[in-house]
Length: 233
Image 1 (cartoon, rainbow, N blue to C red):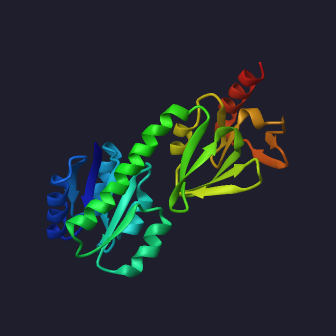
Image 2: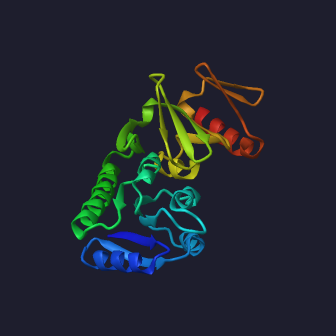
Image 3: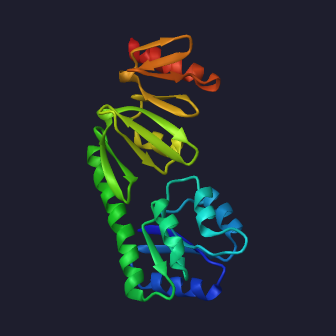
């Protein structure tokens, strides 16, 4: 079951989503909101899997709303204007519904959400060796052993690989930590996560991973050295 909420400043649009969701057995529409600020407050207490999100709202548009959502949540944008589609997909939206849309078109969008959830569940069997990252409009399978280090840029992460390539994805540091195997990675700085196995040396509060120097943040210093010493023993 996919837990969802809908946010739109037009009550009629919310009624339509409620009606469509009631006809789909794998969507649990928990609540609807005409005010984005109230929806954000709700999400802080009750995270969901999927957002139906209108783009044009007077107090806070849907694009900015989604950037405020801290947890990793699927989103389907709705709007009457096609020009917002590119920015919506840049945020890795599952789909983009152009108003007015039919039930068949709505069903096509939520089927994508179901496929995505099922794929995530299947990955639990290989969680010790791989993770799946959503980027470039698709899911990318990444071998944990190939991760050199992870770097944060506000709402985005840059996952540096052993090949010298990297993957950019819209995720928080907290959400990527939850995907990584416990005890194998350590957060050394507000902007860096490093695999303990890839650390070559540590000098003057600087971690050396290959040719890369990673600073150790003051607030992460104790946890880092405890993890590093434990891995070295």
